[in-house]
Image (cartoon, rainbow, N blue to C red; front, side, top):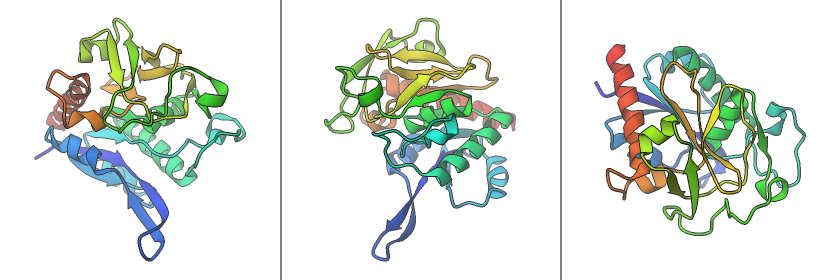
Length: 248
């Protein structure tokens, strides 16, 4: 049996010729997981809450994907200028999925919005808009193609990420206008941009594998060599998921 990974999705409220709600996810997430023998189980905001534990009991890992801004009410703030589209139904669904996943102590990979949501889940806060609240010469919303890497990030020595990527500096893509403001108490930064923006986090106290990255490793993974840091991240996650599947 191939290990199963829960993968979060969003809902487009008016999609297709009939302008009806439609579940949405970039296919590259599923394709990247398939590369390592992992089968995706799509979790949506329209699932009944009772479906989450029923489905997650069969999953051996979780991927929190990119997408809309996280509702600032979840970390005690009012909306500010620069806040983008929020989807509270998605926020609530993914917070519940994350709660169930951490209870089950399964491996977790959080990407872009996923990192931000995970930081909020564990008690941290976000910059609602980096341009306004944390101005920098680094363009965190790049205009280059999505597989292009545009700025460096320093990997923190001794972190789990350092052990995975085996390099002191990463070159990453950048498609986010929000970011971590206050890091959650039980998370720690494992990669940081030159302007101080947190680019990766991990949870030393979590009993299983957990990594959050602010960039999109799946967008480079398909064309990278086996020694590429983005592939190394997926390889490490795949090994952790396979190990968990072997235990169940």
